[in-house]
Image (cartoon, rainbow, N blue to C red; front, side, top):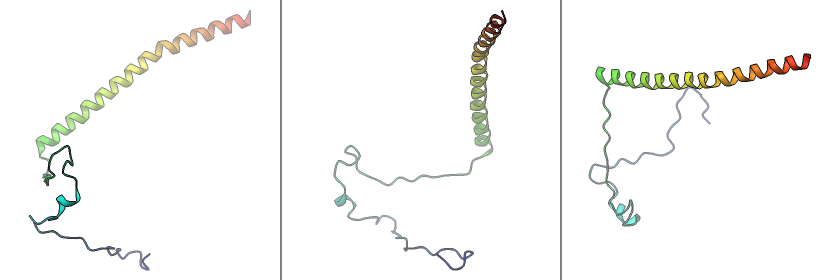
Length: 101
């Protein structure tokens, strides 16, 4: 543990930086040939860009749509249980009247 808590912790090992096109020259030797259902492994790049105004509007629209569907399901569940609770209340009132007799 570091003596000074404000000082960041140093990395425990140095990261290995591989130049482009020279990544793991013996990588096929350590993996079986049929890895991934017979397909050869390859590198894939994922590009992440900033979301624009149209994308943000679509994202908000989708979130609002899911929120509306959840709200309708919640209200529907409450409306299904309302008659059940009403039946229990009527049964309780009837049994209370019978006990008084």
